[in-house]
Image (tube, rainbow over all chains, first blue to last red; front, side, top):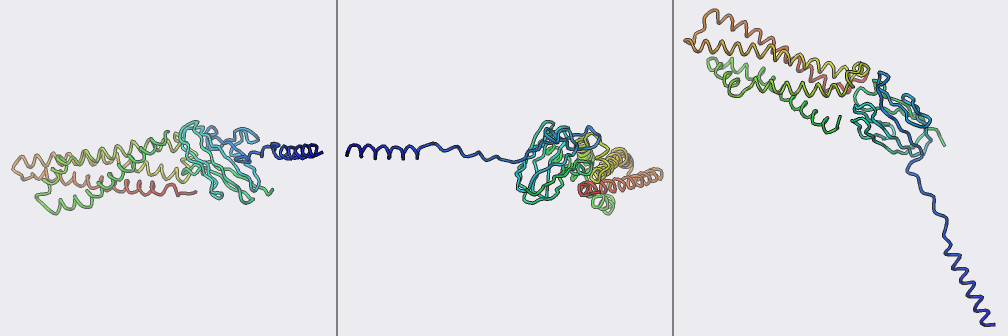
Length: 141
Length: 174
């Protein structure tokens, strides 16, 4: 009887330990961003513009970018014409470094704190006025 | 264009441009009036300035560097003379500034330099004779002086216009 009790206790103990050691399902990896846009610079239209690359904005001139409040947005800028350019949304403190040679890329990741419409543009003097400007529309979640 | 090359060109352009207008202002407002004031020693001073200090050569080098570096920077900024950019505020500003600098460059190279050289040669002729100019030489000198003064004034105004537009062009937002 004592042996039986001892065995039962041992089994129970082993079950408890085994239950505690069961591997938990892995925690979900946190993404670095929620939304990503890729823009390239172009002068093919005769004016200076951003062109959307991939996804819903593919091929669009100065595409409207859409995101939600609270999103982490990643924008990749690709130099498509060999001139100096950058991408900036001053109202959201977002700005890439300058890309000065063809095929050079730069990126910026920023978090959107408020809903609304924000202008994005190239800050090189004259480029915004020459056509390099678009909108980022942020909706409430 | 590589960012380091851009930076180097900007350094060359701004440094040379600063030396160019600095030297022009120094000459126009300080050297020239001083030369007139010291009378007989004036021509000797000018000769040292030109022949020993190589002032004309200095001016030619800094103006050429300014224009060459500026030309490359303009070509890059304008995307190969893209009209859409040239019609913007900054585009207009940089274009006007560039043209003004070119005026100053050619007036200096084709106007001031040769006229000053002629005056120098005439001065030498007078010196090699008995030091007293003939009425004809006086008349020629006066005409050359008038031509030189006009060219110097045009040069100064063009350089000033260039600097003012270049310094503010990026803020011409229209």
